[in-house]
Amino acid sequence: METIAVIFFSYLSGSIPFGLILTKFFSNKDIRKIGSGNIGATNVLRTGNKYLAVSTLFLDGLKGYLPVAIVYNFYPEQIQISSLMVFLGHVFPIWLKFKGGKGVATYLGVLFALSLSLSILFVFTWIIVSLIFKYASLSSIFSSLTVLIVTVLKDNVVNSINPNLSQNGNIKIILFIFFILIIFTHRKNISNLKNNTETKIKI
Image (cartoon, rainbow, N blue to C red):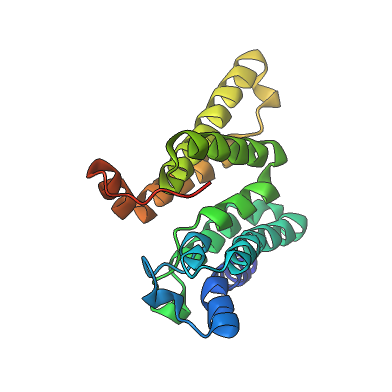
Protein backbone atom coordinates (compact mmCIF):
# COMPACT_ATOMS: atom_id res chain seq x y z
CA MET A 1 0.00 0.00 0.00
CA GLU A 2 2.89 2.36 0.79
CA THR A 3 4.46 1.70 -2.60
CA ILE A 4 1.21 2.48 -4.44
CA ALA A 5 0.77 5.71 -2.48
CA VAL A 6 4.36 6.76 -3.24
CA ILE A 7 3.93 5.96 -6.94
CA PHE A 8 0.77 8.05 -7.32
CA PHE A 9 2.01 10.92 -5.14
CA SER A 10 5.35 11.15 -6.94
CA TYR A 11 3.94 10.77 -10.45
CA LEU A 12 1.16 13.31 -9.95
CA SER A 13 3.60 15.80 -8.41
CA GLY A 14 5.97 15.41 -11.33
CA SER A 15 3.19 15.69 -13.90
CA ILE A 16 2.22 19.27 -13.02
CA PRO A 17 2.94 21.17 -16.31
CA PHE A 18 4.23 24.44 -14.88
CA GLY A 19 5.57 25.64 -18.23
CA LEU A 20 2.14 25.32 -19.81
CA ILE A 21 0.32 26.80 -16.81
CA LEU A 22 2.59 29.84 -16.48
CA THR A 23 2.66 30.75 -20.18
CA LYS A 24 -1.09 30.28 -20.47
CA PHE A 25 -1.86 32.36 -17.38
CA PHE A 26 0.62 35.20 -17.82
CA SER A 27 0.92 35.51 -21.61
CA ASN A 28 -2.20 33.72 -22.86
CA LYS A 29 -0.03 31.50 -25.08
CA ASP A 30 0.05 27.74 -25.50
CA ILE A 31 3.67 26.69 -25.08
CA ARG A 32 2.90 23.51 -27.04
CA LYS A 33 2.45 25.67 -30.16
CA ILE A 34 5.71 27.57 -29.72
CA GLY A 35 9.20 26.51 -30.78
CA SER A 36 9.74 22.81 -30.14
CA GLY A 37 6.34 22.46 -28.45
CA ASN A 38 8.11 21.31 -25.29
CA ILE A 39 6.71 22.43 -21.91
CA GLY A 40 10.15 22.90 -20.32
CA ALA A 41 11.99 26.08 -19.38
CA THR A 42 14.16 26.17 -22.52
CA ASN A 43 11.12 26.34 -24.76
CA VAL A 44 9.35 28.77 -22.43
CA LEU A 45 12.32 31.07 -22.99
CA ARG A 46 11.37 31.14 -26.68
CA THR A 47 8.24 33.10 -25.73
CA GLY A 48 10.60 35.98 -25.05
CA ASN A 49 9.74 36.12 -21.36
CA LYS A 50 12.83 35.32 -19.29
CA TYR A 51 10.92 35.59 -16.02
CA LEU A 52 8.50 32.85 -17.07
CA ALA A 53 11.42 30.68 -18.17
CA VAL A 54 13.22 31.12 -14.84
CA SER A 55 9.98 30.50 -12.94
CA THR A 56 9.36 27.33 -14.94
CA LEU A 57 12.91 26.16 -14.28
CA PHE A 58 12.52 26.75 -10.55
CA LEU A 59 9.09 25.13 -10.26
CA ASP A 60 10.05 22.11 -12.38
CA GLY A 61 13.05 21.64 -10.11
CA LEU A 62 10.94 22.10 -6.99
CA LYS A 63 8.42 19.48 -8.09
CA GLY A 64 11.35 17.08 -8.40
CA TYR A 65 12.82 17.98 -5.02
CA LEU A 66 9.78 18.16 -2.71
CA PRO A 67 8.13 14.76 -3.37
CA VAL A 68 11.44 12.91 -3.13
CA ALA A 69 12.44 14.79 0.03
CA ILE A 70 9.07 13.99 1.62
CA VAL A 71 9.25 10.32 0.67
CA TYR A 72 12.83 10.17 1.93
CA ASN A 73 11.68 11.37 5.36
CA PHE A 74 8.72 9.03 5.69
CA TYR A 75 9.53 6.04 3.47
CA PRO A 76 13.30 6.04 2.77
CA GLU A 77 13.14 2.54 1.31
CA GLN A 78 10.88 3.94 -1.47
CA ILE A 79 13.31 6.66 -2.54
CA GLN A 80 14.21 5.09 -5.88
CA ILE A 81 10.65 4.52 -7.03
CA SER A 82 9.70 8.04 -5.95
CA SER A 83 12.62 9.57 -7.87
CA LEU A 84 11.75 7.62 -11.01
CA MET A 85 8.02 8.35 -10.88
CA VAL A 86 8.56 12.08 -10.41
CA PHE A 87 10.74 12.13 -13.49
CA LEU A 88 8.30 10.02 -15.52
CA GLY A 89 5.46 12.29 -14.41
CA HIS A 90 7.21 15.26 -15.98
CA VAL A 91 8.18 13.47 -19.18
CA PHE A 92 4.86 11.62 -19.60
CA PRO A 93 2.12 13.70 -17.89
CA ILE A 94 -1.30 12.12 -18.10
CA TRP A 95 -2.93 15.56 -18.44
CA LEU A 96 -1.12 16.29 -21.73
CA LYS A 97 -1.58 12.92 -23.41
CA PHE A 98 1.81 11.82 -22.04
CA LYS A 99 3.69 14.54 -23.97
CA GLY A 100 5.78 16.42 -21.43
CA GLY A 101 9.20 17.99 -21.03
CA LYS A 102 12.71 16.62 -21.31
CA GLY A 103 13.12 16.33 -17.57
CA VAL A 104 16.41 18.11 -16.90
CA ALA A 105 15.12 20.61 -14.31
CA THR A 106 13.09 17.90 -12.60
CA TYR A 107 16.11 15.59 -12.66
CA LEU A 108 18.15 18.31 -10.96
CA GLY A 109 15.44 18.75 -8.32
CA VAL A 110 15.51 15.03 -7.60
CA LEU A 111 19.29 15.15 -7.49
CA PHE A 112 19.20 17.91 -4.86
CA ALA A 113 17.00 15.66 -2.72
CA LEU A 114 19.44 12.76 -3.13
CA SER A 115 22.82 14.47 -2.91
CA LEU A 116 23.86 18.12 -2.60
CA SER A 117 27.41 17.43 -3.83
CA LEU A 118 26.18 15.66 -6.98
CA SER A 119 23.75 18.52 -7.62
CA ILE A 120 26.56 21.06 -7.44
CA LEU A 121 28.64 18.86 -9.76
CA PHE A 122 25.78 18.76 -12.28
CA VAL A 123 25.26 22.53 -12.22
CA PHE A 124 29.00 23.25 -12.48
CA THR A 125 29.42 20.84 -15.39
CA TRP A 126 26.34 22.19 -17.17
CA ILE A 127 27.59 25.76 -16.95
CA ILE A 128 31.10 24.89 -18.18
CA VAL A 129 29.87 22.79 -21.12
CA SER A 130 27.27 25.41 -22.11
CA LEU A 131 29.87 28.16 -22.03
CA ILE A 132 32.15 26.14 -24.30
CA PHE A 133 29.66 24.65 -26.77
CA LYS A 134 26.51 26.76 -26.17
CA TYR A 135 24.13 23.81 -26.53
CA ALA A 136 21.67 23.23 -23.68
CA SER A 137 20.98 19.67 -24.80
CA LEU A 138 24.66 18.71 -24.93
CA SER A 139 25.24 20.31 -21.53
CA SER A 140 22.37 18.33 -20.00
CA ILE A 141 23.48 15.01 -21.46
CA PHE A 142 27.15 15.50 -20.57
CA SER A 143 26.32 16.68 -17.04
CA SER A 144 24.08 13.70 -16.28
CA LEU A 145 26.79 11.39 -17.63
CA THR A 146 29.42 13.12 -15.48
CA VAL A 147 27.32 12.70 -12.34
CA LEU A 148 26.84 9.00 -13.12
CA ILE A 149 30.53 8.35 -13.82
CA VAL A 150 31.73 10.23 -10.73
CA THR A 151 29.25 8.32 -8.56
CA VAL A 152 30.36 4.96 -9.96
CA LEU A 153 34.07 5.78 -9.61
CA LYS A 154 33.66 7.12 -6.09
CA ASP A 155 31.67 4.06 -5.03
CA ASN A 156 34.26 1.70 -6.51
CA VAL A 157 37.10 3.47 -4.69
CA VAL A 158 35.24 3.44 -1.37
CA ASN A 159 34.23 -0.17 -1.89
CA SER A 160 37.83 -1.23 -2.52
CA ILE A 161 38.88 0.40 0.76
CA ASN A 162 36.00 -0.79 2.89
CA PRO A 163 32.86 -2.42 1.42
CA ASN A 164 30.92 -1.48 4.55
CA LEU A 165 31.34 2.22 3.75
CA SER A 166 29.78 2.00 0.28
CA GLN A 167 26.47 3.89 0.26
CA ASN A 168 25.93 4.77 -3.39
CA GLY A 169 24.57 1.47 -4.71
CA ASN A 170 20.96 2.62 -4.87
CA ILE A 171 21.93 6.04 -6.25
CA LYS A 172 23.99 4.45 -9.03
CA ILE A 173 20.99 2.54 -10.30
CA ILE A 174 18.65 5.52 -10.43
CA LEU A 175 21.32 7.78 -11.95
CA PHE A 176 21.91 5.22 -14.69
CA ILE A 177 18.18 5.04 -15.44
CA PHE A 178 17.96 8.84 -15.47
CA PHE A 179 20.87 9.07 -17.91
CA ILE A 180 19.18 6.63 -20.30
CA LEU A 181 15.90 8.56 -20.04
CA ILE A 182 17.63 11.89 -20.67
CA ILE A 183 19.23 10.40 -23.78
CA PHE A 184 15.74 9.30 -24.83
CA THR A 185 14.11 12.69 -24.24
CA HIS A 186 16.94 14.41 -26.12
CA ARG A 187 16.97 12.02 -29.09
CA LYS A 188 15.82 14.75 -31.48
CA ASN A 189 18.46 17.12 -30.12
CA ILE A 190 21.12 14.47 -30.63
CA SER A 191 20.00 14.13 -34.24
CA ASN A 192 20.15 17.91 -34.64
CA LEU A 193 23.65 17.97 -33.16
CA LYS A 194 24.77 15.37 -35.68
CA ASN A 195 23.22 17.39 -38.52
CA ASN A 196 24.62 20.66 -37.13
CA THR A 197 21.10 22.11 -36.89
CA GLU A 198 20.77 22.31 -33.10
CA THR A 199 19.85 25.76 -31.79
CA LYS A 200 22.49 27.37 -29.61
CA ILE A 201 21.68 29.10 -26.35
CA LYS A 202 22.47 32.75 -25.85
CA ILE A 203 24.69 33.30 -22.81
